[in-house]
Each structure stands twice: as C-alpha cells, then as structure tokens.
Image 1 (tube, helix red, strand yellow):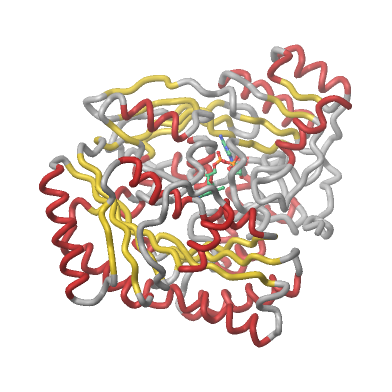
Image 2: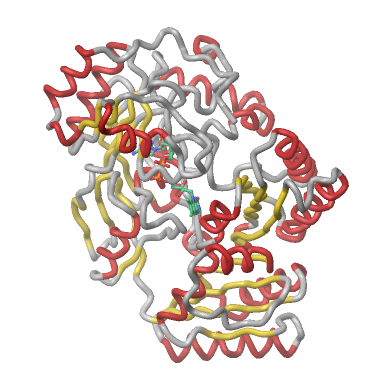
Length: 494
Ligand code: FAD
C-alpha cells in the first residue's frame, strides 16, 4: 500500500540538480556519496526503505559525512538552496521517521563513527553519533563499563538515532531514560550552525537545558553529530532466569515479588506470550532448545551486581518463593553465558520473527501494568467478531517491557489492510484514552504516528512543539513531513 498517497511534496523545496551534486562532490570524497545511477539502485534502496518495509522514499542522493564540519557545510548549503534533508542512523526506527517521503537528501551518520574519549573516573563517554550501540557497549566492556541502554536492534542502530528517538529498551527499568543519562550533545542546526554542548557535567543548572529538546526530536530540529553519555559500571555478576506462568496476573505478581526480593540487582523484567514463542521457534533459527514446557506466558529476569554468589542466592530464593506460592509454574536460571544469550535471543527475536511471519504491524503502548495484556485479548476478540482472525489476520502477539508498563503488540496478517488497521487502532485508542496511556511509549512519532500527536497532547503543548520547530527550522528542510505532515508549513508558525 502507498502509505504516502495523501501527502503532497512541499513545492517550496528545490529539486536536486547537477550543480548541487557538483557542490557535494567538491566537499566530500567520492566514497561518501551515493548518487542515483543504473548500477546502484539496490544500494540506494537500502537507504530509501525502512526496517518495516512500509515506507519507501525516492531520494536520489545519500551523503555520508565523516566530520561535524562536513555535516555543517552540507546542511548550510541545503538550507540556503531549500533542499530537504532526512537524517538517518541505523535505519531501524519503527515509525517511518528515518526514510524520505519524496526526494529528500539522506544524510547518513554511518561514517561519523569515532569514539572521542572515555573517562573511567566519571564514567563519561564522548563519541560520534554514528557509532553503533553494540560497538560502544563492547568498547566499554573492555573498560569495566556498559551503555545504560540496550535494545534488540543494538547491532545496527546508532547512538545518534537512539538519542533522536529517546530509545527505551530493556535496561530502562534500572537505568531510566536517556533524558537522564545524556550529559551533552553536539548538534548541527538546520541553518548549519554547530551547537557545541558536549558537556560531561552531571550537574549544570545554568538556564534552560537545551540538549533535552533534541532527545526524542527525531531529526526534526537538527542533526546530532556528537554524544556525551553517562556509562554504568559493568556488572561483575549477571544472571538470567526464565519463568513459565499461567496468567498475566501472575506475570504481575512475579514482577512485584522480583522488585521486593531482587531490589537493587534487578536489571530487566520482560515478558512474552506463548504465541510469540511459537513464532520465534517457527521463523528464526533457534539452535538451542527452549528449556521450559508450554505455558501461556513467559517472563525473563536479568540481575546485575558485583557478587555472583550473593546474586545467585537471591535469584534462587526468589525462584523458590514464587514457585512455592504458585505464582510461577516452572522456572530455570541460565547455567552459562551461552544459555543467557539464547534466552535473550527469544525475547529480542520477536520483531524479526514477526517480519518473517507475514505483513506485520507493531504497536508500542504505555498503559498501567494491570491492564497491559487486556488490550491484546480485546483486539483478538474484536478481530474474531469481525471475522478477520485466523484469516487474513494470522495472529496477534503481546510482549514487552513489563517493568516500564510498555506493551508491544504485533499483528501478523496475510497482507496490509486499512480495515484491520482501523479496527485495531480504534480498540487501542479506547484503552489508552480510558487509562491515560500513550500510543507511542518508546518508538516516537515519525510519519506513522503523526496523526496521534494532535489528539494525544493538549493543544497548548502541540502549539509549543510547532513553535519550536518553526524557530529552529524556518525553511522546514529538516526531516519534513514528520510530526506535522498534513499541515502547510507556514501554519506551524502559531
Ligand atoms: P534511525 O532509524 O536511522 O532514525 C530514527 C529517527 O531518528 C529518524 O527520525 C531519524 O531522522 C532520526 N535520526 C537518526 N539519527 C539521527 C541523528 N544523528 N540526528 C538527528 N536525528 C537522527 N526502540 C526502543 O526504544 N526500544 C527497543 O527495545 C527497541 N527494540 C527494537 C528492536 C528491533 C528488532 C528493531 C528493528 C527496532 C527496535 N527499536 C526499539 C526501534 C529502533 O531501533 C530505535 O528507535 C533506535 O533508537 C533507532 O536508531 P537508528 O540509529 O536506527 O535510527
């Protein structure tokens, strides 16, 4: 389906010309440019299409600068000429924010990949925004530290993309939001000015905290080129347990007990339903056997601390308690690193398995934990009543970050259909309205969720967002059509 069919290209934007290409060739080496030609259609397509394969732009040019100065020169030129831009990191975003809608120039951060410095005393890391999250975590591991965030796409996503989306992930329950762990940013503003706020200070109450504006701004206010982040001490002892449970109520009971008994060492509490497990087993190569029998729900707990014996003892006591109380039907503690990784790969493999199982829709909802799974049940029952469950909807899965009240729901269908989307979304809307939840807990707005922005926040807040966009980017060149796609640009100037 052409999801952009009701969007119109902003006629104020210039179309890319040969002169523009000559300019970019004059400031960048040839390997930093991908210019449309007969021989590189496939390469260009990889930048034009998003991870979900729903959004497909028609950009004819990708630039891959290596320095902040190069980014600044590119952006300055684009602003003067009114050439629209899309910043792109690892292109793993799930809301259609990282790809062009029309012919916007893609600025990829993949060559901005240098680690600038690490200070083991203050645990601060400064790096380019195009560093891959997993590479940063490996770098820190050698220095006894770790990144405060961990997400399933860590092998591809960039730290700049993480900041731009305010990514959550599985360590959120313990280390909180990037709004707390990002200490400074370097950003190229839409007119090419470099904002140097690469501070490593924990405390700095001198006026407005400008960097916070860019965390979660999804490339609409500028291009993040450098990141300063507070790393965490790497745990000397890590343990993982997987639990089999009979009901979502017991998932909650297990979570409550884990907070009580594992308190300071609890690092992650994730869940998935039986259908998610089946989907992963069917569509991904799971060489290691899943160690539990079939249960309606599973939970994964990770602990991290400094004393292996102490932590394992605590985790074993927790497991005994929840099994004695009948909260958990069965549970095991991973015996070694390989088994830990294999258990994590089940949870982290669910989105990938969903993409292989059919045409997938992913939802990302914040809602009070007690009603989290009721949404999945309600969606299934509404699809059944409408005669859509089974065919064309293959299945509906619930999984996610219990500790943060963040449900992920995937709807796997034979093909994309507006009828299914409308039914599912009106059901989700009912639940989030009733419980004052959020329709985008951690994935952002991009293009896909832009319609909810107007409805989910008070007008005063949305007006401030519009004003901010207009102040930073009066020509509207920076990631256009995202956040406010259906509005004439001038209307943003409230
Ligand atoms: P991209 O997808 O390239 O871009 C995302 C947005 O940020 C776009 O709007 C883009 O324009 C903008 N952007 C990118 N780089 C910059 C920059 N340097 N400056 C300014 N703007 C920029 N998300 C979570 O929050 N939690 C999860 O647990 C999670 N798990 C995932 C698991 C899988 C398998 C997948 C595929 C995705 C998952 N995601 C998750 C979503 C996604 O990985 C995150 O949103 C991630 O932070 C995006 O990073 P990226 O580098 O791929 O950014």
